[in-house]
Image (cartoon, rainbow, N blue to C red):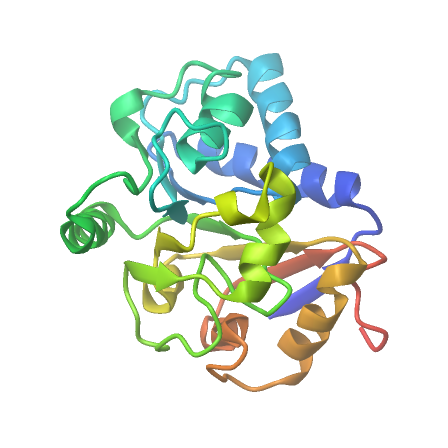
Length: 243
């Protein structure tokens, strides 16, 4: 695992956008694992800019999102379907809808949906690059502390700290979904290359634990130590003191 401080969110996001662009340029049939949230906004802004400047053909690129809230319609402004359309797919409308995959959290057959998405990943994968953020408690995707290290796509009960952290996106804390469907830790590790982004002082403790600790269920992100090709990019505020 390589952890590198690129100074700022903008610089780190631009660098990773270039990496995603290069992957799609060099391999038109690329498969990308995508993430959402405030960490990723600049990344998609720069990626769209690069795609537009170069008129890249992405019609054969497939994308696979990490997770989705349970109970939100795809049209809900805080759903990850809405997020991805807002920041990427509508901004560069050349991705084929059939090639953009996001778990469906608005169904009564949740276990069936988790199995369907897991089978999709197994049939279509592995992804070439998996993008990750990290929670303040060390979760990746929505794999909270205590998650089985061998987990595949599954239904997750969100912890109080995750609900609290995500409440800034909702009018009221009680509006934050309590569950999500998420790629599991084993699912994430199937990617050929993993890039994790972490910005801001609130992520510093998680970065220190990721850097210092061996694989432990208490800090799910530490599973990345078991992968041979992981890059972690942080800004000044998230960088551990001993990086």
